[in-house]
Image (cartoon, rainbow, N blue to C red; front, side, top):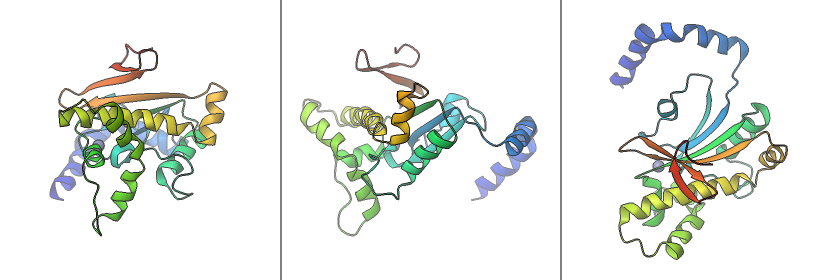
Length: 212
Ligand SMILES: [Zn+2]
């Protein structure tokens, strides 16, 4: 906790001056983020840092494994779905990024052993939402023997699964139809901080900026 408190003091003393005008403007005019950024709760994936975004730029959803449930799959109580609706309908973001990452613990758990018994019942049910990703890895990537590669491949497939599921949201469908919303699948490699983007034409993740 002491580190957090020191960080807050350091921010207020050293950094806030640079942001003072921006925070005042955002407090008066409200937020107008351009992008809904959905990524993993993992402490190594910092949306604002890796995209060099400022306060007010990104509407960020972090959840375990950056899983996007289909709109109807968890009933009406689902914070990720709520954030999607708010960002798309009210904030009118122009882009949605689903960003997976390497060495994802959620993907490792999905491919390995889900928590069982009375231990972590919520985590177990949450990860079950990505069962189709596990099935794809089992059926199409059985040849991958290296576990680290399998986990990263699951991370990429999970991004595609999330993009597909975004289409199940009525608000997303409407804005895709009128051409005012774009969807992007990204993958962040922790060791090198490289970002890759899914290219639908080649069906591959390519270095960001080189995809179509
Ligand atoms: Zn993760």
